[in-house]
Amino acid sequence: MARPLRIEYPGAWYHVMNRGRRAEKIFHDRHDYQVFVELLEESWEMWNIRVAAYCLMTNHYHILVQTPDANISRSMRHINGVYTQRFNKRHRCDGQLFRGRYKSILVSGDSYLLQLVRYIHRNPVKAGIASKPDDYPWSSHKGYLSVAKKWKWLHKKFIFSMLTKSRKDSVKEYRRFVAIESDEEIAGVLERKKWPSILGPETFIDWVKGKYYTLKADQEVPQAKDLAPETDLIINAVCKWWRIGTSRNVLTGPLMGDPIMTPLQNR
Image 1: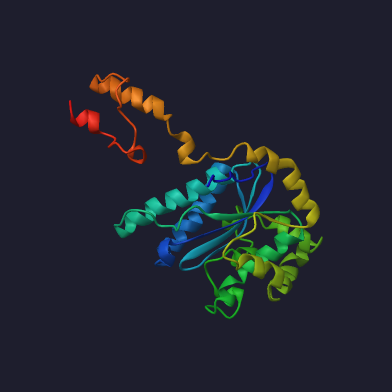
Image 2 (image 1 turned 90 degrees about the vertical axis):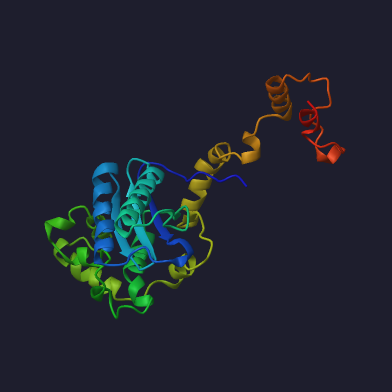
C-alpha cells in the first residue's frame, strides 16, 4: 500500500499522538519528562510551531499544535528523533523508541480546539492517575494557570480568546471549562484504534477534501515494487557482468521451469 502524505498548509492545526514501541514506557522519570518539554520549547524556536496543549503520559503523549510554516512532518520528525537520541543515550540503549510514525488529525481552528485542549489536559484524570488536572505535573494545564515568563512559548492566549473576551477572566473561564468532563464525541474519536484524518464541521472537511485530496493522490509515496528496475534491465546488467550473451536462456525464473542461476553455475 502507498502511504499518503500528510496534508500541510500554513496555519494548520493538528492533534498529534505517539506511543512507545510495544506499549513500553517512553518516560521513566522526571528527567525524561523535562527533556521532552524542553524539546517542545526548542521546536517552538527552531520550527516556529505553536503548541497549544500537551500531556505526557508514561507510554504516550498528546500534543495540540499549529504550524504557521506548514511543517508538521519536519517538526515532528525532529521532536521524535531528537527525543529518541537523548533517551537512548541516557538509558544506554539503542533502536526504535516509538511504535512508529506518529498519528495526527488535521483539526479545524474553531471550538474543536477547545474540546481538544480539555481532552488533553483531562487525560490523566480519565486514566485514573490524577483526581483533577491540577494534580498532574506533566501537562500544559499548569501553564494555563501561570503568568510566569517560562510559559511564553505556550500558545494559550488564542485558546483564552475563544473562551472569553476579558483577559482578567481568562483563567477563571478556562478553569470552569476544563473542570467539565470531555465531550463524548471527541473522546470517542480519539479512543479509536484508527483515527480519522480530519476533525471538524462538514464545511471544513469538504474544504480540505476539495482542495487537497486530489492533489495528494498524485503525490503518494510509491510502493516499493514500483521503484524496482525493469526485469530486462536486471537481465542485461547480470549478463554484462558475467559476460554472458543475452540470447542464452539466462533468466526464465522458477515459474517457467528453469533455475534462475543455471547459466551462471554452468560457466
